[in-house]
Length: 205
Image (cartoon, rainbow, N blue to C red; front, side):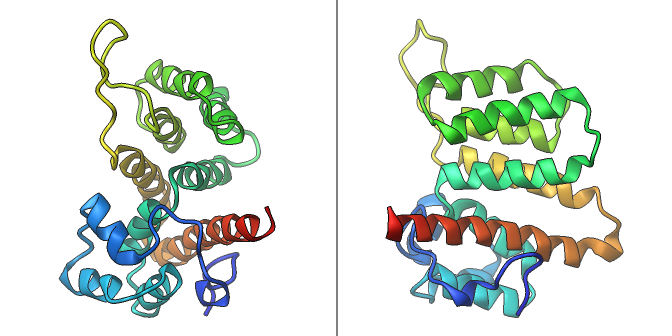
């Protein structure tokens, strides 16, 4: 079974994820993928099998949403950045490139300085775009929702994942309807590839 430009998930266990099991991901982030999909995913013991079942059922929207939260936040932001950069074409305008550069700097070194810089870069723009949502997703992987002079209020645990999902949805909406399924599969392929590399790094690191 192909998923765009990646191997299908059954070829490798996805072990470096936000939670150890699909049911734990569903519970932590209060995911609602539709009654049948919720039951299907929760019944699986591994992320690999959960994604495989969703792909076999051609529930690509549900698979994308699930993976946006099943990935650890750093890998989820990377997925949004890779997808957004791929959608820009060969001669992209400066603004989305700057937004992605800010998010990617945090991915490479996820410290407070780079997280805050990604958020500031995103907040300096107004128009919604995949690149801006990717930078916002990086920016809300920590920090506080309140100004420095007030008590800290951490971002909701699901906020970064929701912003990643917004970025991915905007990318898909830019495609003609007849190409949607192929683009969904290609997008999932990139996300699964990121999850596979994270698992491989865990084994060799």
